Length: 488
Image (cartoon, rainbow, N blue to C red; front, top):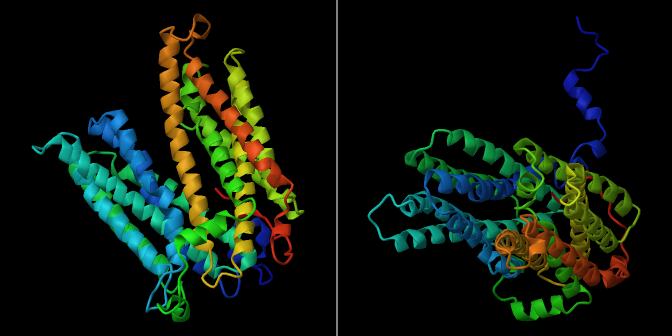
């Protein structure tokens, strides 16, 4: 018989400090954890679509449907065409006219419709693209491109307006943590849906493909409806058509004309590109040049994640003591210089351990840079919002997302293309006998990333001397930075 003084096992968990539980420290009476989790479901739907586009469909299109790899890469890149317009979408959600009094909900719902429509069309377009039809091939190309573009517009519109809504309903002190939670849910959605898709498509057929993709379309609508339910308060006084709206051009000019704003986004784009260009060639480099096995190269992802987590733990301590986030970002770039140097020298030294060290440091440097730029963006947002009757969270989060997504996508595509082009020239001996080596193409990309990091340091250098507090109208205490703030 259980002792009456002994607490049930489930009650023991309530004694765990909130500092040890992810995101538990950001819940408040007005914004409880269940409401935050509910809102974050829109990120799960975006993560599901992302996993489907860049993971599952890559393999299905190339292997089962026999589509050329170059065409697959082109189709997967199409959703990024809409990324530069995220700032405009965010601004429109800031200043939306609505009789119902909603600003963010219409744009999240519009993005949901685009995403649903694209996913509904996509399986039939892919079947046409595989050649299993009597339609002209240009129809298949047009239909597939249209489907991928629709999904891309839906994902980016939903994410921009959704993150702006999360920022609106969260207290100022916890806004960075709430946005970070949204990105963590994005990653969880990608992982979980990827596993589900792999199980459902284990026995491939065209009918199964149609069922899976259209099932994902319907599930994305369900997730977004649940996420939006009773989240945004109706405020007709802010969405009335009688209120004059500033133009996007003027608002953007005012925002970009602020001191250090352009420099920050230049640094963000350069740094993001520098850390992302190696994403598609790091594992092939380990296998082709250093002779590592598939399992050994797969382990690199875990090493990079470990490095990023270590960077976060240190960032938490430094930022909680008032460290300038620009300085933290610059430290990440410096670590990146060491990381890519290790990767470059691992080939002539034939040192797999040096290569593994470099991969871990890439994750570490990228983690420092990501945490620093996210924190700086949140400070910039807090500084520019108070005197704006509409708010600018949508505009700024849209601009941050546009720069980040565009830099990531373009740099990843360029990394693979540059590696292929330089390797071809090197193997043919067109650039000299000294470079007649299959590692030349990889090394060229890594050297280019080093130069991008140096350019990042040049751009971010003056920002390090600027304290975010000095740019605000009134001094504010440095917000706590714990596990909840990790940007994923």
